[in-house]
Image 1: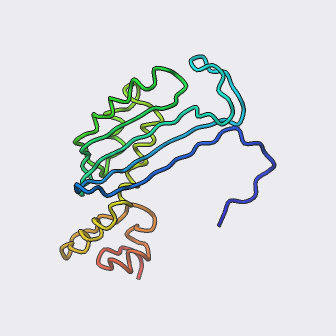
Image 2: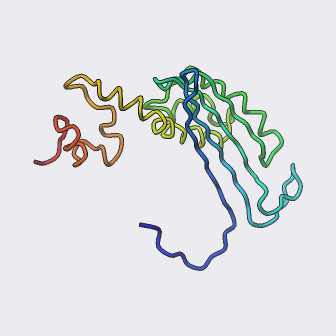
Length: 183
């Protein structure tokens, strides 16, 4: 169901996200994300002068290279457009994520390594969102591992969202031994 029709309005700001997941020929996986912010009106910027409508205020990208266990092997962060000339200086800090794993606590790991003054709000936001893209990209690997799950072993997806809540009809259908709802 789409959103309800809005009241008459004027668009002032547009933020676009683009995420892609790739399987590499060397057995690793690249998860790429990009964030672009534009305005529909010209505005003054102290570092860049006047920014015309449609020109990016923010245009930033990350390539996260992971293995089948979601361990980070490499990361590249790029700031092509930002409101301040010093913003790109922080991108090397994202290399601190090498060796971490996308798993429970990912947000905290990201904030610990590149949060606050050690990072960039926009790149951190992008990196956090890339975790779900990684899981979607590696779905075939995850499904194969799930098929080899030992009897009685708790499914990894259990209680990760509303659909996989232990008392949901999805869990009742897919993993009846772990269903906790009413019969």
